Image 1 (tube, helix red, strand yellow):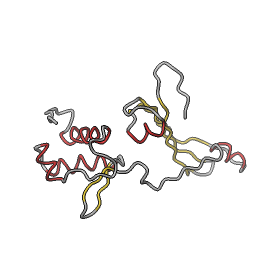
Image 2 (cartoon, rainbow, N blue to C red):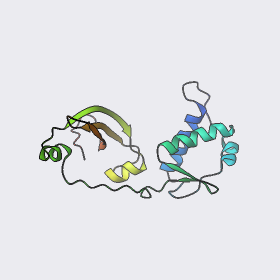
Image 3 (cartoon, one colour):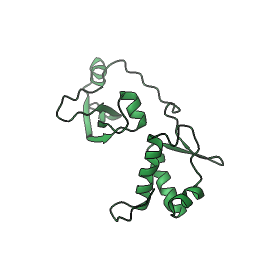
Image 4 (cartoon, rainbow, N blue to C red):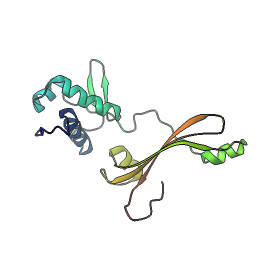
Length: 161
């Protein structure tokens, strides 16, 4: 990768973008150890601090995981201990308890699907997706945070999945 020297894009952000591309194109496969920090320093001709910041970015995005004395690995999409059970809608469930659901905060943005989201939505990696983040609760307290992904089709209906 040729590192661009642009003030708008820091070196670590450019390198993090390249790391993401390596994961999305499966140059670095799930569960596989990526090159060591020193090897990455040699490849990108940057300091170890810059490489660490790029790796930290991808760790925050749950794309990479560090294992002490073993290295940094591409996170396995289905390795996480996440369990999803949807029985009823949030509002319906609260109504059955005599409560009124409320949304405290909402964030909506358009982004590009990473490998994991693309798999779940059965779309191409990099396709536009709508991300809806909501903080919800009832009249007494706030206790739920929801993230909903939906395929985004500009100019066409965008039914949530």
